[in-house]
Length: 413
Image (cartoon, rainbow, N blue to C red; front, side):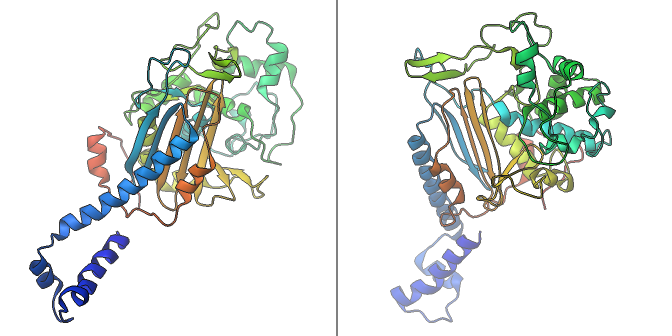
């Protein structure tokens, strides 16, 4: 708003010299009435021009990235740009993607698992520094805390390698409980001691999903629906579950199938026995639902800001290869005041980036395993020249429009 105010100040106080040579004693209102300017429309027109410029920049960026997927860009809470590119089925190319389509988020699911843990902490059901064995007593490693899992500082070995070696029938789904049983039985040597080093590892967030189940006595997919998706009306979001399935289906039951990109063309990615593990991946959502979630974080609708803000703080004192991790969000020294996550799993890629300094949000979801990012995306987010004025979003009205009704919500200060 400061930029708009400055522009109007210059317009009303500098134009008199160039056009009519009015004296400085002429009031703004007198001059406005003489040239018949509408101040309200001027504010709106200036904002619309800047929004149009940002939308054009976003469109140019995404076209250069050659996406097959859906992109959304928002600034100060306003959706500036959203568009679908390409096809649901790359072998037919007759069914176009739509902005409402839901994609598998891959590792971007982790920010939601972290949010579930933070909700339980806020409700007094667990503490971040509790030992994991307090909730999973058969887990064979002592000294690993909930916080270590959140920050990827557990030092544990990868469950994918454990399953590959000891889960002999890959046609049978492999679940979180199966994962815990294999760790308890075979006790693979950890890579590091707990809380020594940041090492990104899917097992951390798979275990967090199991903690949610042990604490609440509720299936993880049901807890996520009842406590996050339904309250925020994220109606296209769900945790894919193979619970109770005796065999791994050829493909996941979903509208938008993932694709593996090969030299000979694209092929639909088949379902995998590891898709039975939740928490580290396997959530489906669309760009509008993810926008709703990020708005809820911005305006403390799920958690008070004093608790929510910890998700965006570095969990390690030393940055490993310029990287760090909060609770479900990545951080990078090259992009201060930015939190983000990338996802890549079995025919899907995704990215969610929140540039906190300029209040910008970028969401990209694709149904291919091709990299969905390009350098121009960071140029768009870090652009300090074309900065939109604050939108003065009425969060109460926004909540009413989105049909959001959360108890104990806290407006962002």
